[in-house]
Length: 330
Image (cartoon, rainbow, N blue to C red):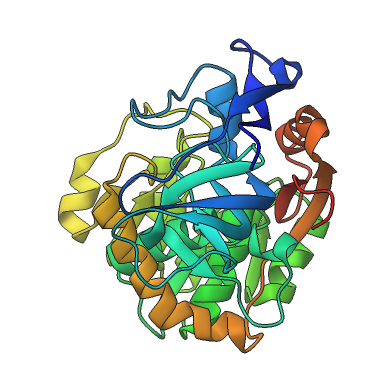
């Protein structure tokens, strides 16, 4: 191995243009870690927030963006079992995915599903860890319940629709164009609501209310979500694209016994993320192996075109995931 590698760094807080190629030292695996030779890296909203100076990485994480990748294990640290050099994996990362090599806890790696290529596998970790932990572990979604996901055509949304469908829920989704709504319906949403011309509150109320809502929008959606919930319903907040501050009448929660919760994935402990990975391996990876669910791919960009990938994501015109091809031979 060479001592340096290619990477994409954030030169300063700003727009997509601040993403620039650089050379960095090769990572070495710490205890419990592996190093992955990256084939593809997923592009996610937190990457753009970090680039804009709005989402600092944890103190122990790489300053390079990139929270998920696929590739081949190239080195194994002490204390690692179950993984070996040459294994094909996809992994949740603490950061550093926009690079030729990245170190991550071995417990956060999952095998590339059967019949899936590296490009598809790079789309899995961030969205599947997020959806499984919030919709099923935190939100407790059950078969037969009514589930609403906002941003249904996003990477999170397309994953949530498929998983909720496979586990027997009735799925509802919102999106901002008819084509995005069509994509949600094809994935299994029984009602795909164009929020520009329909009110999701009215739609859900007519169905008896949502038992669980997964929201990335925030802002004025929060009180509207509470109105759309059924009695004993749950709201899980995972992002605030329209802002984190809003006025809420808590009498609504009390009288209808509603639950509000939420989480972010990156700051959670390695142990918590390993627990999510264990559940995914047991309950979700068989569905991927069988081809019953699959990531939805929007577009692929060359590694050096990371700024273009970010610009694409920030138009919000994409349906599904955006990836960077890091290894030209992958």
